[in-house]
Amino acid sequence: MMQAKIIICLKEIMLKFTFVLILFFVGSALRAQNKNNCIFNENSLDSLELEAIEKKFKKISLNGNKYREQILIALKYYPELRETRIVFRNKKIKTTMACRPNFFSFFKPHKKRLYIIIISNKENRKEKGVLLKEVPFNAQIGVIGHELAHVADYGSKNMGELIKFGIDYLSKDKKRIIEHKTDSITIAHGLGWQLYDFSKFIITESKASVSYKNYKKDIYYSHNEILDIMKKMPSLYKTLR
Picture 1 (cartoon, rainbow, N blue to C red):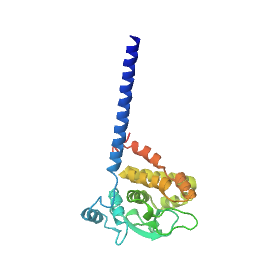
Picture 2: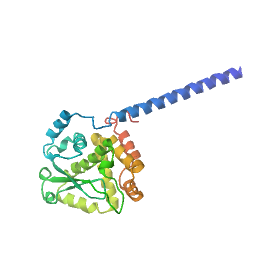
Picture 3: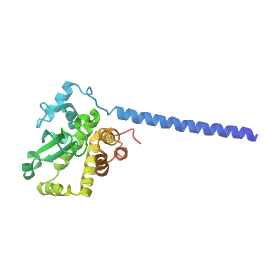
Picture 4: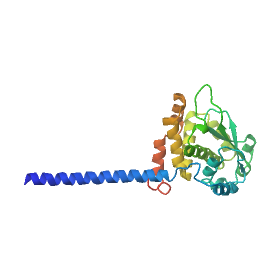
């Protein structure tokens, strides 16, 4: 009698264990599917779709830009920037990309400002960073989206606030706060998976120097932290739990 009860209990335990495993694998599959639905590649949008996006952002010149497609995909998530003047320039800088208002734009209202997004095109001899051309397509959209988040944030600031922003950025602790906020803006605009891919690539796959990776870990959200933030936005990232 006792042996029969033990067998029944063992069967119940096995059934519960199997059920938990099924839930785990189904959940993992749903998360993977959700991510796969948000992965862009060079064939994600056709030429007509890209032209339609470009027409909506008439004040942004992309003629001859090798990252035109990635920029347009990222811009699609920032409709508030349709009337914003943005220029993309190639230059040797320490990080993959950077964004700042044109100097004379500090004295103008947001709608009349010119913002410059710089794309690093040469390696820094002193420290190995990551060039945009080395980054996977979907992750490129993530870092572009991050720079566009800076533009969106600048748009809410007057001249005095922009000057204060520039001073704050010289402080490591305040820079961390600024970049965390910018990452959060990027995620809130729907580019969480792209930013996740960029962050994960930099830390786990790129050939960047240890000091560069440590800088990224210190100042920006890690890919796991990005995932945690995404979980708090179920309307944008529905299958994440």
